[in-house]
Amino acid sequence: MKDQEMSNMSTDEIKQKISINTGISIGFIVLFVFILLSSGYLVFIKGNMAFVGLMVIPACMAPILISIGKSNNKLKEELAKRS
Image 1 (cartoon, rainbow, N blue to C red):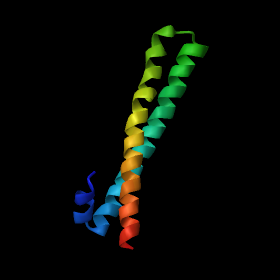
Image 2: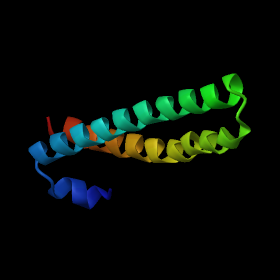
Image 3: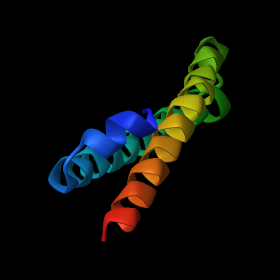
Image 4: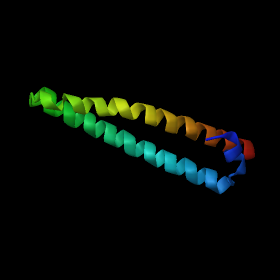
């Protein structure tokens, strides 16, 4: 998100965007843990090597979580400037 876009947003909009980003992050982390545990169970305990590909999905989710976190930090900084 660009600085100009953030400066045009109201304080309530920034708070709403922060809560949406936090909710998305929590959802991704829950999904991340579920996929990791289920694929680990299928591969290591059941011995089914066909599910090794599932372990790639959490690695693909990491950059999304990082970008959401950076966006959230910028929004929090803008909110701190206003208060």
